[in-house]
Image (cartoon, rainbow, N blue to C red; front, side):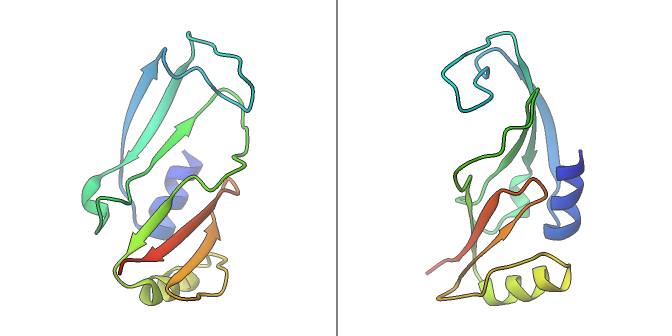
Length: 117
């Protein structure tokens, strides 16, 4: 819920919610699988994005396990404008270079915004 609020407040995203039971039991960096786990997803509504390549879903798992990779990129028609909007909303950003920059979300995941060419 905190991540959903953060993405709504900082990026303006709206979400829909759904649960998946079974088939989603990998919850960490181990090969162990638990088929009885129900995972709660918060999917961004598609009209929040300019690009079909910028879909995302937040996943609530039984234990917090930080990701060790960049989970996704967000495509942008105007990364310079997006940079200024996010900066004005208090999001910590890396310097913009060649139409790209990154930020860390509430959970510490590194997200990259990439200008569409």
